Image (cartoon, rainbow, N blue to C red; front, side, top):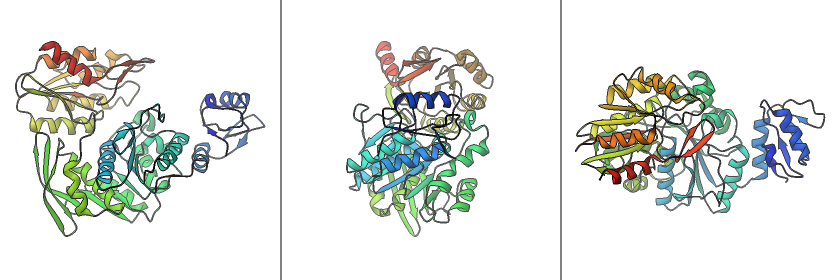
Length: 459
């Protein structure tokens, strides 16, 4: 079959072009024909050579699946506001430790058996879930690489834009729900409904849906769609639950219950009791894909933390410096509460909010940081096309004692310079990211590198 393209810049003679609705759709159609496209599909067009279709995005997904039909034998998907990346990496590790060649695709890129696939080997766009053509091409690449088990993150944008439709999945999980991406979805109700499309439009209704009874709104809505549920959570009403959770620096210990079985003192080398929910969700997906609970419990102590998630970068002046990816209100609250529990001194928080994104998060995150941290330093975090100082001021309105340092490098340096024995510096919002976005510029910037450089310079 000929190549499928959804970007007119990539069209070559003989390709099929699917024109995704946008402001420039007529220009894209013209460009595609000029470059030699044999067939062009679109929802609307004045060009008489265009074949009109009802849903161009769904067609792009179906044609891509037809063009790249080979997928790993076992695929599962994860949606939710927070925890998608952690759950997918934990599940992939479980599969690997139990002898399966596994892959995971999401925010951090593409991994096979926990090894990142380099861009020169296979280019993956910088999206949580890639476009439909790339997505199905990746799936066939994994199958050809002898991967048998794959987990991918299904973002709300991807579900709305049908990037991963036509995927054949054997289970799907919904981690949790908080306000995010309201710049795109406008309301929390629409955002929630979009997440549910994973269960109503992609997951076959006879395949397991993984949800938590701890989040009754999610449970109720998913249960209306799918009756084959596996539940996880802290409450003992769930199929898989955790009790007697103990948190220590870099370690969690808990009892894991599954139906009539109890596994005592399960140990995990992860920071933060919130990780228990992520572990339980990964175990539930393991059960849904045919793995024995006892075998999975045995490998849980081997699970490694995810890059940029509650990641200890450096111990300095008797305190610890962490980076974390939390960039939503609930994510920030959860992370700071975990740091608070293990902090023996002051909790120093460095954070900001992204530009051209949901503005309602800014006062919420300021309030949360003010309530939990001892010292708050408000700085820039991908201002994009917005004025950075205006974003900072929107945060500071609810974080009255904050120190404002717009330059992120200077903000990190100042936070580290304040450190005393027992303190924790938490640099929030970017985690693994390696660039800052100012206007239309992607400027190289890595929080971890700046932390390490600062520690050397202050020694």
